[in-house]
View 1 (cartoon, rainbow, N blue to C red):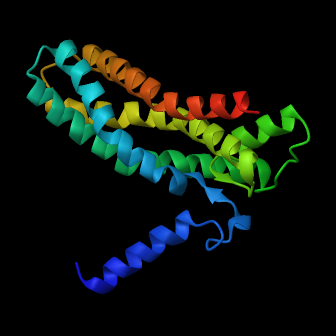
View 2: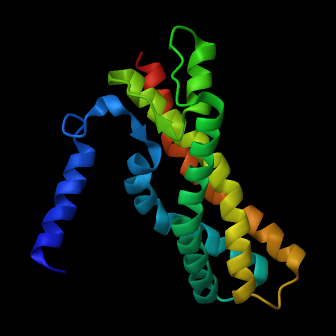
Length: 196
């Protein structure tokens, strides 16, 4: 990697993390916000799912781990952006990127659900509430897309496994890993609500 490329990467990283430099009044594409969290969660998710596959398929942990790694890499690179794009399409189709005022709880819920792909600008505590909520909402389409993609990848690794057994194992593994993934934004929400 050349020095200029590294400088551009560092600039972009700092730019996205500093709301004043990034003109925070344009909103937050939630996928940019959650990239760091996705990277942190990748290895624990691979391990959680590998343990499920080891037990479900009665294979060596090394084989389950390799398959889980490839399946999760595929669903992270393809599935997460695909889930976000589908959310964004739904957001544009239903709201035209309009923002509903935060004057009551029903408007807050509409904003959380319909505007979760690209959050409008919020500040302070309100921003933290909306970001954590949007992450939870974004996990819903990501869950179903992950199941489809990972099942397809795992068929290549475990072609001798009964398709119904494979499907059940993928569902079980993803339920476990998504419970792990949803804990952090939910804990963040609870801390924000309790700290009111």
